[in-house]
Length: 322
Ligand code: 13P
Ligand code: SF4
Image (cartoon, rainbow, N blue to C red; front, side, top):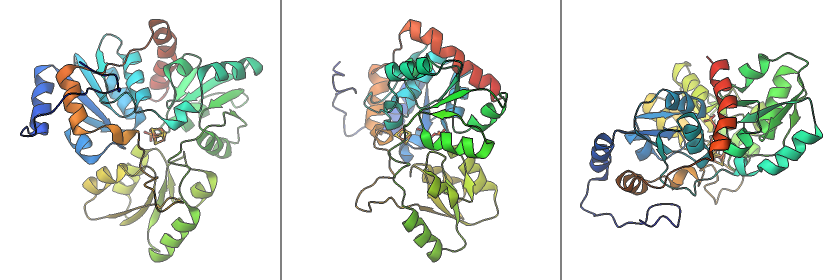
């Protein structure tokens, strides 16, 4: 089977009900589908579990299926493989990368660590397996604050790769972590001016902001948090209207969970682009998911030596976030 392009290239019979076929194959092969909140609605709807990066890692750890299909981006597939090395881990499209993970190549981080000895290395989960192998503790946006607060106040820390999340933690905790200069191209695109304009039109709306956004956007937030935290806050708070400054995929679950509430995507700087869509996440389509289950390809593989070193900082994260 040809996966030269990073996904299975095989014709799909147009008369098939793809959702039914996916469910059939899943059962037949004892497979499970995980999906991140940023994937398209139809992928979220067919998944066995949806969640943020933290929840998906926690779920993966306790699964006993033979095949795990990770609908998200490549580093999420790697995280699952590191936690479940004996399972077959599949992704619908290997091209689903991450601009944030790409902003921190392992050889450069290695030099940075060597230049700053005696520092604990904390890496955001949005990193390659090779970067995780250089890390002491992995964190996600859902547990970063809690984990960093659990360390002694004078502990020297290197935090990477997201400078915005790092800045946020520094300002909330008073720490002076050394920050890697990376960022997510989606979360850096939101326009403060347009959010303020929207606030004028919807004065009652609360602003939900992911900590990967830059400081000026965080400063107008009513709630800063991971996708799961923002979803929970929107669901449980008494407010009815929200401006959402994170990737647009989360709106699907927000609208499903809160049918009576209104969610407005925060506009990006360039209104001619769909910049609040992560193009990598949107590479997960029903057709590719179907072919992935059908041919059990493409598989995510991580070098055994890297798995051994990368598992420890992830396991440490899972223990510290209990
Ligand atoms: P969370 O899932 O931790 O909210 O992270 C968002 C993200 O950018 C995932 O790629
Ligand atoms: Fe990476 Fe940003 Fe896409 Fe998340 S939204 S996967 S951080 S590029």
